[in-house]
Length: 78
Image 1 (cartoon, rainbow, N blue to C red):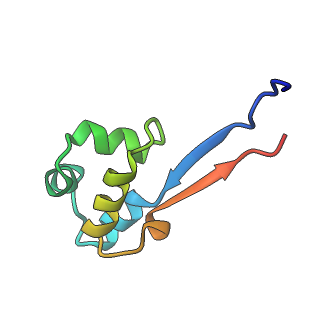
Image 2 (cartoon, rainbow, N blue to C red):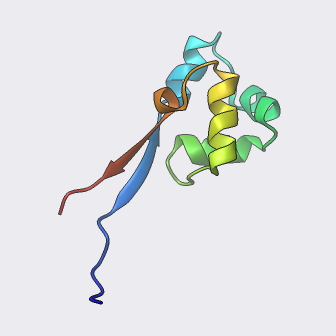
């Protein structure tokens, strides 16, 4: 079995836009709704942290939208 490097990957999100579209919800308000810290929301918004599957679903539920409208997975082609 050969070992090859996997392409770079990133989970992108639309949280900032969704917060704005939802009465300009603050990061703190979203954090309280889904049960995490504001810093966690900041890290997710800035693509510094990929949320667990459960947290991703909770965020989508907070916006009453499908998860694919909140998150997308991007693979760099090398």
